[in-house]
Length: 589
Image (cartoon, one colour):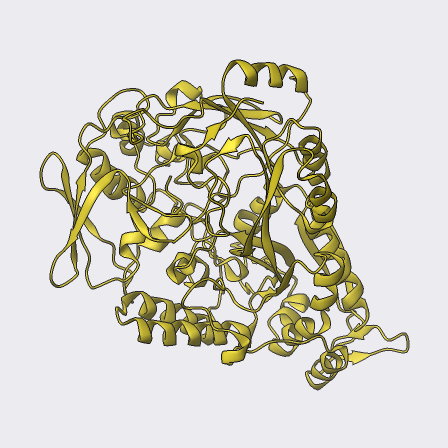
């Protein structure tokens, strides 16, 4: 599986449950007994099956995608996938991949070098097709792209404008079938948009979705489940020459509540569930009796944070994205630093996470060799409401007789904080943030909303004030976060430019520190000397903490409960329980 398609998605994050709507629990267990079936779940419906244009990492994608290379979920080392080998030129600017012989798509058609060239030249590098992957493929200060050409029937050559340290990892993004998608790339709809953008929506006949990964989509029922079945043409074989994967079928249930997921796991019908800190003690007591194992992978490769909308832009009709009064607060560095000091992260860790984690301070995972720790000088914001008030008052804010915070013009400081409904941890975090900020006179209107609505509001509407979210699976390579930190990146959510095809904004401003962080990410990718790379990313981490476009909260432990009937699990925070799903087996119950 790829694991490299998104900056925020280098690993597979799969959680489990069974929704009883439309198909009873007993029916699913009978079906599972007839066909080896793994039962998983997701908190939300997929918005699309088009892995290129999606801005969220659906659990489905990691099961159907495959790139030229893959990543070992334990070591983080790069391993061959569709390409059996690769070779760099002496100047490190040409990389030649050799595909495995006899590769096929899930419809049985040959998977060839032509598909690789099509995927990159006609899709990922097509300016008419919005894709976060293109941000990651930009190379150097000028953001140039690689050129891709066919050498022969099995070899494809990538030429890059300059040495680019993360390039090999980037080629884990999924390869696409030219014979299915060519016409959609070369034709436009009545609105002048490339038809590919609307391809493979959730209403598509699954038989039309042709993939290279270990599984293929069999069916999708809105609000209920996605069913996947084994791809009979998947390339991997075991040591005896048997076709992989062993698992025949996966049921991915849509369960929008973590409590329901826990209930279904405890009832014995689910195969894997992320362990929330509030559930840990309960599940630990049932571990042996109910024949499952709780795996602890150490600090999770996730980021949890709040972020303010710093976008000063206006729409074409002159309407500002953010109320100018509130925008002035959000863009005031002293305000953001005061917020950071006012959030009691240790209390959050103790009460919400049951001590299973640690306060988070960096955008880069602790496991990464590029991580800068507080002991090495990374700036941190300890809980200090007195200091928060001092910062606010020094910046011109003031308190009225009821200790409510007002700005210099007398406006009450009040904003809306949104997060995804159904995630109990985030709902509890939001509730605490509301109380913490009330202690420094700020009124927070906390509003959990549906996840898909939240994503659309942030990435398309651009009219939010503050959100609480997390990025999953950051990986160990910092450049995986390039599209968060490049000013024009697709995940630069705190100051996001409109999507391709949307009207441009008037007056969007990129601050000096934003530009500087983007420059550091460009330099870090250019630099091949590991010592120098570490220094560059250390400076970037320091700048992020100095300016707080994201106020980091808690780094929890990576905990998953996995049924013992799943054989071959090699758990890690990097890969989770299912990174090697192609070789996992299901024992009889």
